Image (cartoon, rainbow, N blue to C red; front, side):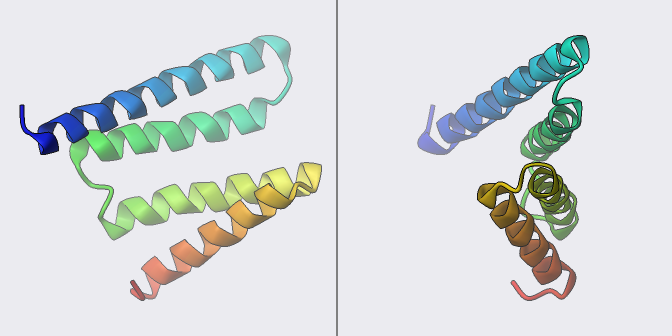
Length: 106
């Protein structure tokens, strides 16, 4: 197995594990009724990541807009509900990346 194939398998495995963990987190959030919105955002982002890795499309502008728009909305939600600085930074970074993609500035 060459290095590129090993990196591809490791990336796919990591994205799959992240998706399974976020889906488990969503199940816990549904049962407890706490943190449901954040859990849904987590499943959306990890599902999009897994699909992007499996289909090898994470370099495409459409995928990047979909992913980073989700990051921006998730960060904005987190900031509005908790006032957390990291959430604000995620929201700003997501908006900047989406704008760069839409304006083709990369």
